[in-house]
Image (tube, rainbow over all chains, first blue to last red; front, side):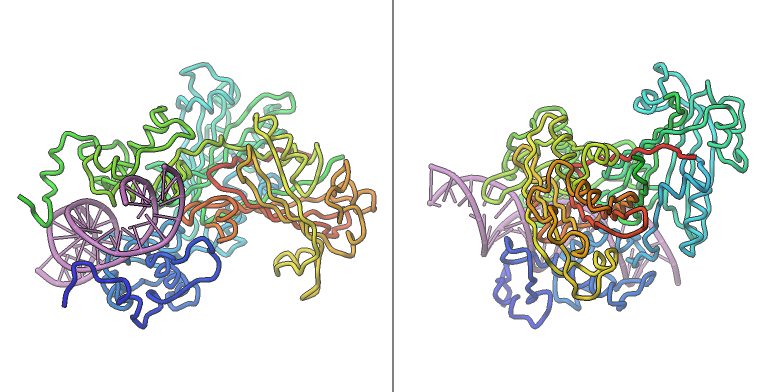
Length: 278
Length: 278
DNA sequence: TAGTGGTCTAGACCACTGC
DNA sequence: CAGTGGTCTAGACCACTAA
């Protein structure tokens, strides 16, 4: 007998974790949604090693079959895991468990090793330490910066600046975008405009110019990715990025660099270290 | 004439932004999902002031009517805005636009004003500066800390520690949870066990004990909220929290505090400042 | 009781991939 | 072409709130 709306009670009687499982906690919800419980099960499967990192998940129809739920419900459950960055979906191909470990960015470390807009030298070192192969690609150009960057650098409206854009990869996978902006008044015609500014990084060049950055401010925000960011970082709209905006100033207070870094929120740990100087 | 499946072509002919709108960017998607375009429209409505902060959104049936889409599609669109922290939904009541501005946490500022596990004095000052009324509530107890905290503090398995739990509110709304853990060997019987440790905060007490914290490490992660966190911060599972884990050590390297702070990711901006000390 | 939002179902169409 | 995932629809049931 087919009902238009299959009664809930029948469904609950199925001998199936998706249909039966209750969960401790969440006291306000007497009944967790089935797609969330299904997401929990799949998450457990990933964490338990049933679906190892890098492996393919069963197809949505297969999962729907196994758990005896409609396919859109499987899709909804996978949407939860996608938003968490746990799985990666390719239309027409399938769903795979994401393989990269959590990456670490240590702000103090970066300063000691080599300041390059907070990027290359330190990025290489950190990825290598984590057992990953680092690669990054730099393009240098002169552009009109966005308003907020222009404000930081004290530029007039429409005034161009030097920008070093960097795309960073770990084990071949895109993991970070960075754009380092510098005033042309400071950086034009220097080694900073070269793809490789030399051993000391751009901060070394700035120091040699008598404009060594000494005061740093980083602001951290979490937000949805822009279309470009999502494209490069292989993110979906439901995932989040961490945006770090760094200002570097000389001891005299002159802003010599504004750096915007973007990375997938689920993938990174940010570490800040400092000492009491009192 | 009713079709089981209303053809897409008919729908697209409607004179309606949800059905027609195309969007620049997102080059990989020839056709954005309708619920995402609807979410975009509602987001615009919020940002443009059509739905001011604190006001109620029209009901889902009303929105479905206005945009000529099925109600579940409206629900799906609102789910996007909920995940972004833009709206707050109460079952049986309705959907309202979230009112709190973005809050700022300045790590350097905190150290100067008053270290209290990175919380009270600085929190009050920052909220006041933002024009908000700060309130926080502290409970002090002795408990067995979670494993990671025990490891930081160098405690034996099952060994208890002193914990100061703090719930923080801005304009009456919950905005942050913090748990400051200290070894009983250091803090037992001191003013740190009092609800109010005095003018210098717990760091002042530690200093008076000859255990002034001098080295700080903060680790920042973004993740889904635990059920308890979601309950207190009024978050949903699709939203994200920022977790900050702070370690404070004396100059000799003794860990004197481990502090875990939790806040809604969409609501906070973290600021770190430092100077080159070389 | 009427109204709110949350979820589910069955079936369908679509875009994309690889064979 | 078959198989993948993404989305949509219409209708329904449910939990919750306020009057």
